[in-house]
Length: 121
Length: 107
Image 1: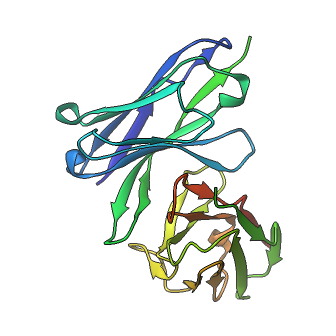
Image 2 (image 1 turned 90 degrees about the vertical axis):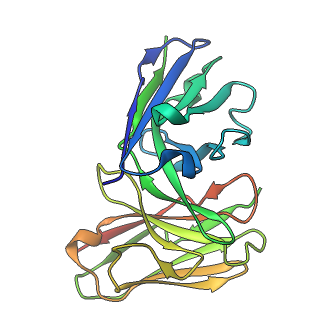
């Protein structure tokens, strides 16, 4: 079975840093585009970042560009999100998602249960 | 950025009724649109991709239609477990965007 297990969420002060991890299992990790999506408490879904299979190509939402870095370690089947210069509005449940790609585009076919990052003084 | 507008914000229906959820894009997204279901306390689940293709293990009562700027998710006969928030998402252009969701309540 496909499993995505996020960790690393914590309470951090504004301006601080945090690194989230996503341990993947049950599929060939290196063959899939991976993503982070977040959800602020009581709010909707917001795409954060996407990383290609090899890690060569990355994409970011404008709201996190320059502050967050997505990366992966394919031999360890792990996806990361390094978050810095954190703001109160970054407080959210962060989901790791796997992409399923058709001949046209990719969609998020598996989601982890999320890890909560809280930015507050 | 493509803005997705979902309507209605909340829908309250009885088991067995038909639900029709709408998603309108601010510009054409071709058929590069997906629908996700998020049940209370759970992670989202992919229901429909490329506007009308059901994802793996999704019941046949869920169907999607549309292209360009107007899309519809239809649940033909509601079950109690369909209580959830439903989000549309476009993959036609960066950044990836989601609609604000439609909350489906089961009477």
